[in-house]
Image 1 (tube, rainbow, N blue to C red):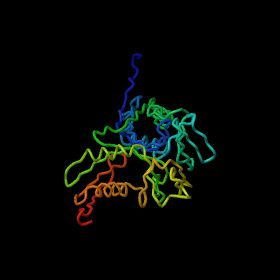
Image 2: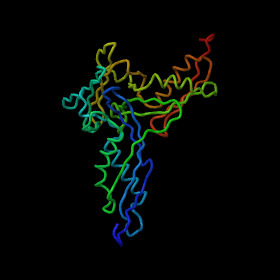
Image 3: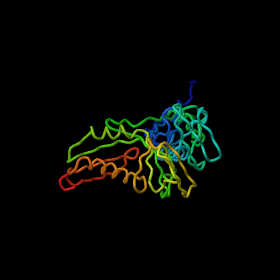
Image 4: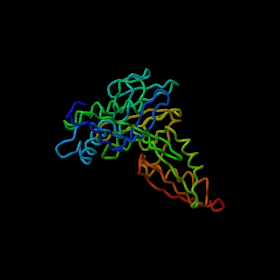
Length: 291
């Protein structure tokens, strides 16, 4: 640094936002993901003594990042199993599993890579958001990290045709905590068994099923304000529920299934949807001798 030059400073903002998205993985297929986003900005202080006020910085970064990738399906454009036909893409995993997806361009983000990795998404985002920062900010580094979850967790994708926001985008997803209590006792063993069965599932509404689906495959489709959405996927990767696939209905579905196996006992399910939010559902099935 030359004499008299002002030092370059860094400003950090942890968990400036978090991204809930679907990911097409060449090996695993359709997965749900949630990443927390940390930002580090570098540059020179302005006349006010600040690099960038935290309030405006957080608002700008969150808005730009969310608009680019949040509640979208992330597509590795160079994956060998990908074919694109207009608004429809066909994705075949290395194991031969086929996923057929249709949706408007606003619901997907394509990356010029073979596999979606958080570090690559972070670099891609930083390159596009950097130009939106004030002139005295000359550097931006983003880090995407999964939430630390000490206990049962699973990931899923879904879509809500009746949602007036971006949740209507079919095949966006989440990585979630799961907690289950039975008669007031925490049961991490039950929650873990459930989470193990729900790794990488698509949770679909029976109301969105279309056509005469074969036993091995299920097809979903609906029209929403943002456009027409459709998904054809192997049935083994799906869970069907009654009503929209909201977190409230998901929590109630889990509670009802577990209560049927623990008759007479009160089952409480705390199901998350991404980070820091979710639903609680309670169920008690009749005792066996009364059923």
